[in-house]
Image 1 (tube, rainbow, N blue to C red):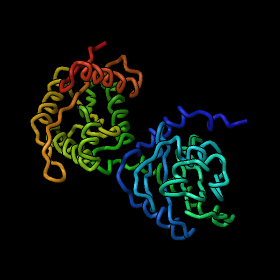
Image 2: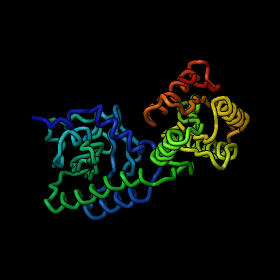
Image 3: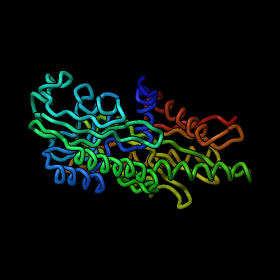
Length: 328
């Protein structure tokens, strides 16, 4: 019988989203691992691969020149369905892969060893892979080495979440921001002090990446963070929740003042000319959802959901605007 979590792809995808790692830039720990795998195992290709709903994306890679491939043709989608390593000694003789475009065409994978990357919840979110262009028998020692490296990768994925500062923007990480929000909600429960949460989402961000490339998208996020930090008070908390979504905590701020603060931030973003790599200048807008803390909020998750609902209204209302949730 297939273990329940191996068959629960929605749960697995939730575990992957929790890691907040997809489409992030190169990071030294993962770069070192793939370099070591390629050197120690003497293979031309090594990857730290994360398997999303429709794609496999390489957090780190050696020997490949693409950032991702469709999940439907990936070896790793087979790896994540089992607890044990997936070993393919000759893909031409394996009916699962003999007609695979990654075997018949570039990078011409002939042999493969993949170790599942398992989260503390028990979900396989990806794999550490070693690949060769010729048939190969991976020895028990090879597999043990690769397994040890995979454990290090899994640990590093978790350690990323512990860090309080987002590597790209300098904002609080999602985990760090949620901790701040919990403290603010507890302060309201104890003392009845006002506070507000603002959700921020860059409008049409996908088109920036599609038209100008991911480095340009990263630059937009960095500059938006700078604008936000310049606009906000020192007492406010600014975090990156993931991708192009940010959030602000406004202590000692009621609903009307929070909406005014959100509008100041929105206008500052709209007025800014974003300088992109290569000399391109771009105008960007953002949509914002605002929710004040109230006795009706049972958890930080409820608070986030209320602000997120307002963000959804702002986007449905034509974008480049702010919406405030009504009080209970």
